[in-house]
Image 1 (tube, helix red, strand yellow):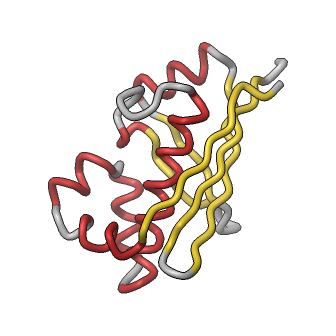
Image 2 (spheres, rainbow, N blue to C red; image 1 turned 90 degrees about the vertical axis):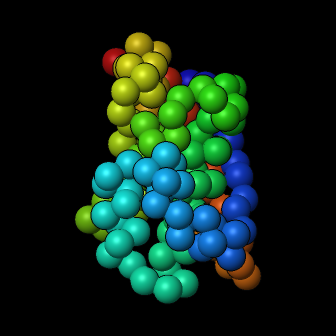
Length: 126
């Protein structure tokens, strides 16, 4: 069963400026995400940060909580070995997902200076 869907767009240039701030990086991105961003440079770094931000916003929209539902750094957006994006939830977000048997699905894309995320929250039957 689908619990919720969410989508969001983020301007890559704006995020490229924002990630220059160490305080912003710590507040928004988990240690794992910060390592992912450090592994990328230039435009790819800003695109990754923008896509991850959009994923966090889309997740919160799918939950119906909006900003403030969970700490943004609890919603880690990492990459599988295949390169596919995935959520790794921590803290209150992980507890909420476990209690509600939620499995998040995520798709990311970027083009023409914008990054987009689409999230589907599935309630598992198991």
